[in-house]
Image (cartoon, rainbow, N blue to C red; front, top):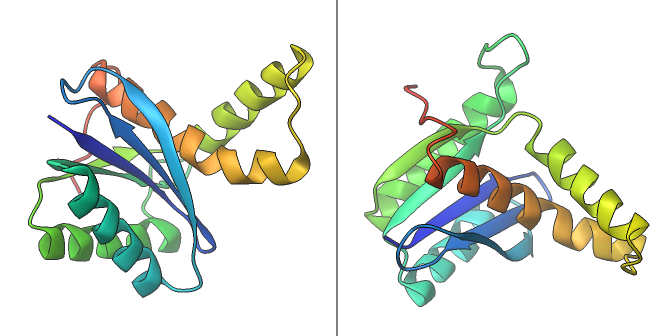
Length: 146
């Protein structure tokens, strides 16, 4: 099952896709957006173009597991997107996913890969989405019941 993971931000939206078999996650793209509507329309275009069958959206819960304003906004956006796309929606706890992605990029840079500040920003959100998508596909990250 082809799955699209979304790391929703106010300025950038990180996207990652699974393979057809739903086993491997790969960073796909980072959309630069100026509004939630622009983010939604960009993601809907990717869903149609890539044959996505399921959508996984990262929800930024607070460290105490509470649902703050950012998480509420992400939930509303995700439900609107899934309704418009007609695809099943899975919500995932994405706390620390950007931190983990940043650590991966730091390790790559230390390993000799040339990563500019601009390149880091461009890849970080898609890498974060791929990280939580892979954890979900591996059964290590359960879906949220919100």
